[in-house]
Structure formats: C-alpha cells, structure tokens
Amino acid sequence: MSDRDVFQPPERIETERLILRKARLSDAAILHDAYMTDPDVAKFTSWKPRTDVRQSEMWIAHCIKQWERAESFPFVIEYESEPIGMVGMHSMSDHISFAFVIAKPFWGKGIMPEALSALIDWALAQQCVNRVQIYFLADNHRSQRVIEKCGLEYEYTFAHPDNLGEPKDCKMYSKVR
Ligand SMILES: CC(C)(COP(=O)(O)OP(=O)(O)OC[C@H]1O[C@@H](n2cnc3c(N)ncnc32)[C@H](O)[C@@H]1OP(=O)(O)O)[C@@H](O)C(=O)NCCC(=O)NCCS
Image (tube, rainbow, N blue to C red; front, side, top):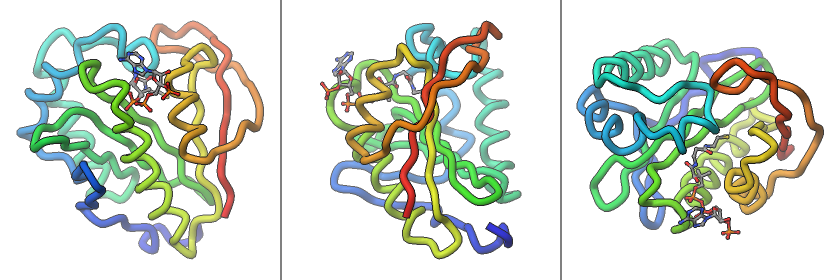
C-alpha cells in the first residue's frame, strides 16, 4: 500500500447479526466489564487483564485516535445492541493484519467468524490490499478455528512474546487476493 489515504474502511459495517463500528468512549466501561478484566481472554492477547476501568478508557481513547490518524482501525462488535468484543484492522506496508477478541459468554456462536470474514472480504476487495494475515499463540485452538473458517491458510511458526513477555510459539496464517 503506497498511499495510506487509499485504505479507509467505513465507520460502520453490518452483517447478518452484527454491527461492526468505530469505537466510542462510552464503549469503555461496557467492554471493561464484558472481557477486559478476564484473564482467560487476556492470556491469548498482547495485554494483561485490566484492573481499573480507567485503563480501559485509555485503551478506547487510543483506539479512537488510531482510527482518526488512519494508523489502525479497531472495530467494536455489537450483538443484540450490546458491545461484546473488538476486531483490530491494522494497515501495514502492503498488507492488513487482524487481531480479535470477544467476551466469554458469547463464545461458540460463530460471532467472530461472521465479524472477521466481513472485514476480510472488505479488505481484500480494496485495490491496495493484496494480503491479509493473522498470527496467534500456537495453543489458541479457538482462534485457529476462527481463522480456518475465514479461509486463511497456515504459513509458518515463529517465536513471539506473550502478554507476560515470555517467548511463545505463534502461528502465522494468511489469505492472498
Ligand atoms: C477466539 C475467539 C475470538 C473465538 O470466537 P467465537 O465467536 O467463539 O468463534 P466460534 O464460535 O467460531 O468458535 C471457535 C471455536 O471455539 C471453540 N468453542 C466453541 N464454543 C465454545 C465455548 N462455549 N467455550 C470455549 N470454546 C468454545 C470451538 O473449538 C470452536 O470451533 P468449532 O466451531 O470448530 O467447534 C474467542 O474464543 C476469544 O475471544 N478468545 C479469547 C481471545 C482470543 O483468543 N483472541 C484471539 C487472539 S489471536
């Protein structure tokens, strides 16, 4: 991607059951309670469980700023009118990288494959995007299933720090236009 301005996702995308939209400050307290304090969620991400709602407020404010600077596009997932998770869409030099999370009570309903495949389809329809990629901790089988359902294929395994800074095996998956 030579011109960052070319890659500008819409602020709202609707799927069959979901609304994917730019974050609002009012999401912070809801997402804090939904999953940001949950160690079972955080252990598969790059962040430690939050202990104070102000940490979640700072994170959401950062997400909004990243979107406005077109550095990254963190979408909130709304299901039955409630924010329940997020998908980050990061534009890199020549490809798009995704990261995602959803609150535990909503696991196993196929919500993340629905959200992620909509964003992947949108990204790969852009002339400036040739590749989407996702990496995850090798023991995160739930994440692997989501990624396989979205049609990405395994590329390689590499070492990367987990949320506590310990090097762990991660798997890279991708899909090319
Ligand atoms: C990974 C994650 C996003 C999956 O989202 P989801 O909407 O539940 O996805 P799916 O409904 O397709 O379920 C994926 C797999 O989770 C497992 N699963 C299903 N229901 C489950 C439940 N109630 N509890 C635990 N795991 C369950 C199954 O293995 C399922 O695969 P299958 O459909 O082939 O059986 C979610 O588990 C999550 O947020 N985990 C913590 C954060 C994380 O791992 N983020 C990814 C970092 S790369």
